[in-house]
Image (cartoon, rainbow, N blue to C red; front, top):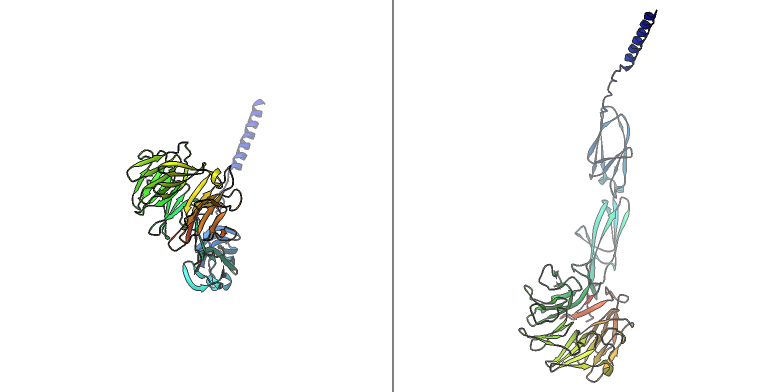
Length: 480
């Protein structure tokens, strides 16, 4: 009995095993053939992105779409500034279809460009091609894209702009041209000048402008190119230029925070405390007397250099941080100091010219210059003793003019051969003419680039060049 039961269990297990094996048996499906639909897409011009049923294929014309199933497809071509173009095409099995879109043949694909300047009459240069057309002007039928436009007009700075032209639209290339009939500015963004923060300027016998900067060294400008000389590419002793002057050999002498650099256009001579009689490297001013001696105002004293020998003159109480000087005679030199007013070095001895006796504006002198009438002009910075101003000494007394606000810095004075006094201030550029009638130029009433004027100098034509703190170099074409 027991053996029969075991036998039945074995037969049942065997049948279950057979059933399980049947379930694991599978058969591979018949593979579906790869679709062979094909669309070739091209355009004139080429380079359009191809979209298939609204999806970017990543392909540019001319290219093909392969392995397409039978059906209806919308093909769209897109490109910046062009109007989108869509084509519907039916694809059947193993079909070879093509699409060719000629944008040149569709007027709706082109755009227009309007040229406008203020003032009108500027010559138009389109993508570096002169059109012999003048503003205002409208050109129709331009292929979409970005165009470079330049405008030129006599006595105005050239204007340049980029404008995008789109299908079926009129783009406007408008530009307000900068008047250069009186004022021209040279800044980092519109010229090759290497700095906008300038300190001083002088002009050599060849008309080259030599420009000092606050931290970028020395710049020369021949009205074609700006060349920068600094401590990285030349022996210039320091990149902060405090004063510039030309000697009889047309060499530029640069007074810097690191000594004196003398440059003849090819080679340098450098003087500092390690190789000369200078007692400090901070050089504020250099002037030459009629004998060719260099008189050097420093932060410590006055120094005379005759080309071989160095002679140091010390004020007994150490009140000789000299900002500027004027050589009246070989034995009489006027000294303007940083904090102690005016001194005269007469017969090699310091003589104080006290503020309390002569009633000049402050103890802080920034600039000294004689006029053709024999008066000596001084610029004063505001300090604890009073407001800054400009004064002239006629041999007997001071006459003072106060310019601008109480805090106005009177930085520099340049007097031309016509007895015009050009005064650089922190609130604009001031002209006192030969009879001392004043005129102020600032960025509210002129095209001067900055009100922070640091110095000026006139060239042989009477054009005045001025340096600014932050606004680069300016040229003022004086009325003739």
